[in-house]
Amino acid sequence: MTELVRADAVAAAAPDPPVGKSAVVGGPRRARLPRRIRSSRPSRRGDRATPYLLLAPAAHVHGLVLGYPLVRLVLLSFQDYGLRALFTGQAPWNGFANYEHVFTGGEFGAVLLRTLVFCAALVLGTLLIGLLVALMLGALGRRLRAAVTFTLICAWAMPNVAATLVWQWLFQPGYGVVNWLLSQLGIFGDLSQHEWFASSFSAFCIIWLLVVWQSVPFVALTLRAGLSQIPRSYYETAAISGAGAWTSFRVVTLQFLRPILLLVTILSVIWDFNVFNQIWILTQGGPQDGTTTLGVWSFTQAFSSESYGQGAAIAVVTVLMLLVLTAYYVRRLVRAGEQW
Image (cartoon, rainbow, N blue to C red; front, side, top):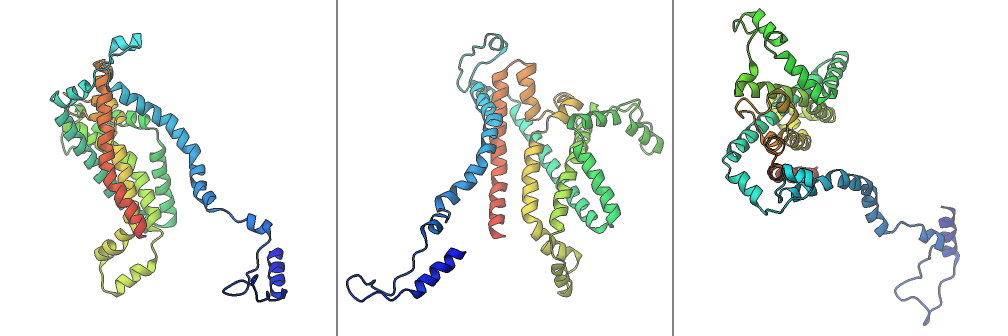
């Protein structure tokens, strides 16, 4: 700063240049800053390269952890990789035979429809219940809000497999807490020996409850953070304009939460489309493949049928479909970010 002041003083005290060949055409000569100050200015190339340099370590880690398995999965889907290849390490290439078997085997349509319907039900249930819980947190007092938030965090932090096993014990016939409680109420009769996983519909309902219970805390806390950033003046302006509670919610709340809703929708689609642990531990795709989704089908084809190439082909198809499903939401999220 001192050198800038000195440079300006020198430029002001310097005499005007003589008129002649050495004079600057178009006005007086501009004072040049010292070389040390000029060299300390950041270059545009450095500014453009800084974000990429900061992202490089994370990109390399993701490339090693996720990139190599994905490339290996794609290569495996074009090979006749079975039990013999597992021991010998040599698998012949069979082109698109695995994909042809997946699409023409007769199971792909039913499994895909079941996966899409289950994913849509999970996403809608998670967003709706998460939004209601977020609104409830805003209406509670400080102490009760802290207690509910702590409960949500505990449910969210519970390991996936452990939560699924607890859920399995709750609905066990004979000694399950849910069966005992419903039998004590007497509304549906004696359900102490009822087998919830004997029917595809009841099994899917229990899995739906489990996945939504595990996903609601993240959505609720995220939406609650977004709700806390909405200025109260907007609601006051809407009330003065004669807007009711529903109109204020639709015009003010939903408009401000749109980018956050898009973000949690993308994450919910990715997570719910790939649900595996809950289904495999509770039903293993049964009864009679009634709860088999694409993830479970890929696992059974690879490890139960010992056809690793077909399992890899199903996994690759699942990844491609997931990219198509999330591309639309990512595009809308980017547009919403540009508008805000």
